[in-house]
Image 1 (cartoon, helix red, strand yellow):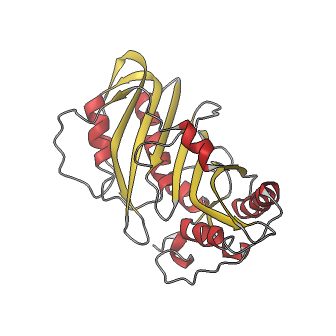
Image 2 (cartoon, helix red, strand yellow; image 1 turned 30 degrees about the horizontal axis):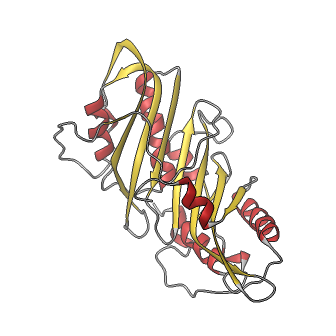
Length: 276
Protein backbone atom coordinates (compact mmCIF):
# COMPACT_ATOMS: atom_id res chain seq x y z
CA UNK A 1 0.00 0.00 0.00
CA UNK A 2 1.40 3.37 -1.00
CA UNK A 3 2.19 5.73 1.86
CA UNK A 4 0.27 9.04 1.80
CA UNK A 5 3.61 10.91 1.58
CA UNK A 6 4.71 9.21 -1.66
CA UNK A 7 3.56 12.20 -3.73
CA UNK A 8 5.28 14.72 -1.46
CA UNK A 9 8.80 16.16 -1.98
CA UNK A 10 10.11 13.70 0.62
CA UNK A 11 12.91 11.52 -0.75
CA UNK A 12 13.03 13.39 -4.05
CA UNK A 13 15.53 15.86 -5.46
CA UNK A 14 14.19 19.38 -4.90
CA UNK A 15 15.21 22.83 -5.99
CA UNK A 16 15.68 25.23 -3.10
CA UNK A 17 13.73 28.41 -3.71
CA UNK A 18 14.89 31.45 -1.74
CA UNK A 19 11.86 33.70 -2.23
CA UNK A 20 8.51 33.40 -0.49
CA UNK A 21 6.62 30.40 -1.91
CA UNK A 22 3.71 29.16 0.25
CA UNK A 23 2.70 26.72 -2.50
CA UNK A 24 5.66 24.56 -1.46
CA UNK A 25 3.78 23.36 1.64
CA UNK A 26 2.43 19.81 1.18
CA UNK A 27 -0.44 18.51 3.36
CA UNK A 28 -0.76 14.84 4.30
CA UNK A 29 -4.17 13.77 5.54
CA UNK A 30 -4.19 12.17 8.98
CA UNK A 31 -7.25 10.10 7.99
CA UNK A 32 -5.37 7.13 6.49
CA UNK A 33 -3.22 6.56 9.56
CA UNK A 34 -6.11 7.23 11.92
CA UNK A 35 -8.07 4.49 10.15
CA UNK A 36 -5.07 2.15 10.39
CA UNK A 37 -5.07 2.69 14.16
CA UNK A 38 -8.85 2.25 14.37
CA UNK A 39 -9.47 5.94 15.06
CA UNK A 40 -12.24 8.24 13.92
CA UNK A 41 -11.11 11.83 13.49
CA UNK A 42 -14.48 13.03 14.80
CA UNK A 43 -14.02 11.34 18.21
CA UNK A 44 -10.34 10.94 19.01
CA UNK A 45 -9.48 9.39 22.41
CA UNK A 46 -6.86 12.05 23.10
CA UNK A 47 -6.12 15.75 22.95
CA UNK A 48 -2.80 17.16 21.97
CA UNK A 49 -0.47 19.18 19.85
CA UNK A 50 2.52 18.69 17.57
CA UNK A 51 5.30 21.15 18.40
CA UNK A 52 7.67 21.86 15.53
CA UNK A 53 10.80 23.89 16.29
CA UNK A 54 12.74 25.51 13.46
CA UNK A 55 16.39 26.41 13.98
CA UNK A 56 17.04 27.61 10.43
CA UNK A 57 14.67 30.57 10.19
CA UNK A 58 15.87 33.72 8.44
CA UNK A 59 14.37 36.57 6.42
CA UNK A 60 15.20 40.11 5.29
CA UNK A 61 14.25 43.48 6.72
CA UNK A 62 13.12 46.14 4.21
CA UNK A 63 16.69 47.49 4.37
CA UNK A 64 17.98 44.16 3.06
CA UNK A 65 19.59 43.22 6.37
CA UNK A 66 18.98 39.57 7.33
CA UNK A 67 17.43 38.41 10.60
CA UNK A 68 17.74 35.00 12.23
CA UNK A 69 15.35 33.54 14.78
CA UNK A 70 13.95 30.28 16.13
CA UNK A 71 10.37 29.44 15.25
CA UNK A 72 7.89 27.39 17.29
CA UNK A 73 4.82 26.02 15.50
CA UNK A 74 1.99 24.31 17.42
CA UNK A 75 -0.22 22.19 15.16
CA UNK A 76 -3.39 20.76 16.78
CA UNK A 77 -3.36 16.96 17.04
CA UNK A 78 -6.87 16.83 15.56
CA UNK A 79 -6.07 18.96 12.52
CA UNK A 80 -7.14 17.25 9.28
CA UNK A 81 -3.57 17.34 7.93
CA UNK A 82 0.00 17.14 9.04
CA UNK A 83 2.52 19.16 7.05
CA UNK A 84 5.12 17.02 5.30
CA UNK A 85 8.48 17.86 6.85
CA UNK A 86 10.58 18.40 3.71
CA UNK A 87 7.93 20.68 2.21
CA UNK A 88 7.92 22.57 5.52
CA UNK A 89 11.67 23.05 5.29
CA UNK A 90 11.48 24.15 1.64
CA UNK A 91 8.78 26.67 2.56
CA UNK A 92 10.80 28.07 5.45
CA UNK A 93 13.87 28.37 3.22
CA UNK A 94 11.79 30.34 0.74
CA UNK A 95 11.70 33.13 3.34
CA UNK A 96 15.49 33.57 3.20
CA UNK A 97 15.52 36.26 0.50
CA UNK A 98 12.07 37.67 1.24
CA UNK A 99 11.55 41.03 2.96
CA UNK A 100 9.06 41.53 5.80
CA UNK A 101 8.37 44.79 7.59
CA UNK A 102 9.00 43.16 10.96
CA UNK A 103 8.57 40.12 13.16
CA UNK A 104 4.80 40.66 13.42
CA UNK A 105 4.29 40.61 9.67
CA UNK A 106 6.28 37.39 9.31
CA UNK A 107 4.41 35.76 12.19
CA UNK A 108 1.05 36.65 10.65
CA UNK A 109 2.21 35.21 7.32
CA UNK A 110 3.31 31.97 8.94
CA UNK A 111 0.04 31.62 10.86
CA UNK A 112 -1.99 32.15 7.70
CA UNK A 113 -0.03 29.76 5.48
CA UNK A 114 0.43 26.93 8.00
CA UNK A 115 -3.17 27.06 9.24
CA UNK A 116 -4.44 26.83 5.66
CA UNK A 117 -2.45 23.66 5.02
CA UNK A 118 -3.07 22.01 8.41
CA UNK A 119 -6.80 22.73 8.23
CA UNK A 120 -6.92 24.20 11.75
CA UNK A 121 -5.35 27.25 13.40
CA UNK A 122 -1.61 26.85 13.94
CA UNK A 123 0.00 28.88 16.72
CA UNK A 124 3.34 30.50 15.84
CA UNK A 125 5.93 31.94 18.21
CA UNK A 126 9.14 33.58 16.98
CA UNK A 127 12.00 33.82 19.46
CA UNK A 128 15.40 35.43 19.45
CA UNK A 129 18.51 33.33 19.94
CA UNK A 130 19.17 35.19 23.20
CA UNK A 131 15.74 34.23 24.54
CA UNK A 132 16.18 30.54 23.69
CA UNK A 133 19.74 30.48 25.06
CA UNK A 134 18.49 31.89 28.34
CA UNK A 135 15.98 29.05 28.69
CA UNK A 136 18.76 26.47 28.54
CA UNK A 137 18.29 22.72 28.18
CA UNK A 138 15.33 20.90 29.71
CA UNK A 139 15.23 17.49 31.38
CA UNK A 140 12.43 14.96 31.20
CA UNK A 141 10.19 14.23 34.20
CA UNK A 142 10.12 11.07 36.25
CA UNK A 143 12.23 7.93 36.20
CA UNK A 144 14.50 6.99 33.29
CA UNK A 145 14.07 3.28 32.47
CA UNK A 146 17.01 2.94 30.07
CA UNK A 147 19.32 1.09 32.47
CA UNK A 148 16.90 -1.81 32.98
CA UNK A 149 18.20 -5.22 31.89
CA UNK A 150 16.12 -6.50 28.98
CA UNK A 151 16.61 -8.96 26.10
CA UNK A 152 15.39 -7.88 22.68
CA UNK A 153 15.46 -9.72 19.35
CA UNK A 154 12.61 -8.25 17.29
CA UNK A 155 12.82 -4.73 15.86
CA UNK A 156 10.69 -4.76 12.69
CA UNK A 157 7.36 -3.69 14.14
CA UNK A 158 5.85 -2.54 17.44
CA UNK A 159 4.98 -5.42 19.76
CA UNK A 160 2.27 -4.37 22.23
CA UNK A 161 2.09 -7.99 23.46
CA UNK A 162 5.35 -7.28 25.31
CA UNK A 163 3.63 -4.80 27.62
CA UNK A 164 2.77 -5.99 31.12
CA UNK A 165 0.98 -4.44 34.10
CA UNK A 166 -0.26 -5.34 37.56
CA UNK A 167 -4.00 -4.70 37.48
CA UNK A 168 -4.14 -5.12 41.25
CA UNK A 169 -2.03 -2.02 41.88
CA UNK A 170 -2.86 1.53 40.84
CA UNK A 171 0.01 3.96 40.43
CA UNK A 172 0.54 7.53 39.35
CA UNK A 173 4.00 7.95 37.87
CA UNK A 174 6.14 9.46 35.12
CA UNK A 175 8.61 7.39 33.10
CA UNK A 176 10.92 8.26 30.25
CA UNK A 177 13.34 6.67 27.82
CA UNK A 178 15.86 8.00 25.31
CA UNK A 179 15.95 4.72 23.35
CA UNK A 180 13.07 5.39 20.97
CA UNK A 181 14.00 5.07 17.31
CA UNK A 182 11.89 4.59 14.21
CA UNK A 183 12.44 5.13 10.50
CA UNK A 184 10.96 7.53 7.96
CA UNK A 185 8.39 5.52 5.97
CA UNK A 186 9.50 7.08 2.68
CA UNK A 187 13.28 7.59 2.87
CA UNK A 188 14.18 5.02 5.54
CA UNK A 189 16.22 7.61 7.43
CA UNK A 190 16.38 7.06 11.20
CA UNK A 191 14.30 9.19 13.56
CA UNK A 192 15.74 9.40 17.08
CA UNK A 193 13.60 10.41 20.02
CA UNK A 194 12.99 10.51 23.77
CA UNK A 195 9.62 9.36 25.05
CA UNK A 196 7.65 10.25 28.20
CA UNK A 197 4.76 8.28 29.69
CA UNK A 198 2.74 9.84 32.52
CA UNK A 199 -0.26 7.93 33.81
CA UNK A 200 -2.56 7.03 36.68
CA UNK A 201 -3.72 3.45 36.31
CA UNK A 202 -2.70 -0.19 36.61
CA UNK A 203 0.98 -0.41 37.54
CA UNK A 204 3.00 -0.63 34.34
CA UNK A 205 5.94 -3.03 34.26
CA UNK A 206 8.91 -0.80 33.43
CA UNK A 207 11.04 -3.43 31.71
CA UNK A 208 8.16 -4.41 29.45
CA UNK A 209 7.67 -0.78 28.46
CA UNK A 210 11.34 -0.48 27.53
CA UNK A 211 11.26 -3.68 25.46
CA UNK A 212 8.12 -2.44 23.71
CA UNK A 213 9.72 0.91 22.86
CA UNK A 214 12.81 -0.79 21.46
CA UNK A 215 10.55 -2.89 19.18
CA UNK A 216 9.90 0.35 17.21
CA UNK A 217 13.58 0.44 16.18
CA UNK A 218 13.01 -0.62 12.54
CA UNK A 219 9.35 0.43 12.36
CA UNK A 220 8.53 2.81 9.49
CA UNK A 221 6.14 5.60 10.37
CA UNK A 222 5.99 9.31 11.04
CA UNK A 223 6.61 10.74 14.51
CA UNK A 224 2.97 11.59 15.10
CA UNK A 225 1.70 8.08 14.32
CA UNK A 226 4.36 6.41 16.49
CA UNK A 227 3.25 8.44 19.51
CA UNK A 228 -0.42 7.78 18.78
CA UNK A 229 0.24 4.04 18.52
CA UNK A 230 2.08 4.03 21.85
CA UNK A 231 -0.73 6.02 23.49
CA UNK A 232 -3.39 3.60 22.23
CA UNK A 233 -1.46 0.45 23.22
CA UNK A 234 -0.93 1.80 26.75
CA UNK A 235 -4.51 2.96 27.03
CA UNK A 236 -5.81 -0.50 26.11
CA UNK A 237 -3.49 -2.18 28.62
CA UNK A 238 -3.73 0.15 31.61
CA UNK A 239 -7.32 1.38 31.33
CA UNK A 240 -5.94 4.52 32.98
CA UNK A 241 -7.71 7.33 34.75
CA UNK A 242 -5.30 9.62 32.95
CA UNK A 243 -2.58 9.11 30.35
CA UNK A 244 -0.12 11.39 28.60
CA UNK A 245 2.42 10.23 26.02
CA UNK A 246 4.81 12.52 24.24
CA UNK A 247 8.06 12.31 22.31
CA UNK A 248 10.86 14.79 21.76
CA UNK A 249 12.53 13.91 18.48
CA UNK A 250 16.01 14.91 17.38
CA UNK A 251 15.98 17.56 14.69
CA UNK A 252 16.62 16.82 11.04
CA UNK A 253 16.95 19.50 8.39
CA UNK A 254 16.73 22.19 11.04
CA UNK A 255 13.35 20.97 12.34
CA UNK A 256 12.42 18.86 15.34
CA UNK A 257 8.93 17.40 15.79
CA UNK A 258 7.42 16.78 19.22
CA UNK A 259 3.97 15.12 19.35
CA UNK A 260 1.95 15.27 22.59
CA UNK A 261 -1.13 13.08 23.17
CA UNK A 262 -3.17 13.04 26.39
CA UNK A 263 -6.51 12.25 27.95
CA UNK A 264 -6.18 15.63 29.68
CA UNK A 265 -6.28 19.19 28.36
CA UNK A 266 -2.59 20.08 28.09
CA UNK A 267 -0.57 23.25 27.92
CA UNK A 268 2.77 21.50 27.67
CA UNK A 269 6.16 23.11 27.98
CA UNK A 270 8.26 23.03 24.83
CA UNK A 271 11.73 22.85 26.35
CA UNK A 272 14.47 21.43 24.15
CA UNK A 273 16.52 18.46 25.33
CA UNK A 274 20.28 17.95 25.15
CA UNK A 275 20.01 16.08 21.82
CA UNK A 276 17.78 18.72 20.29
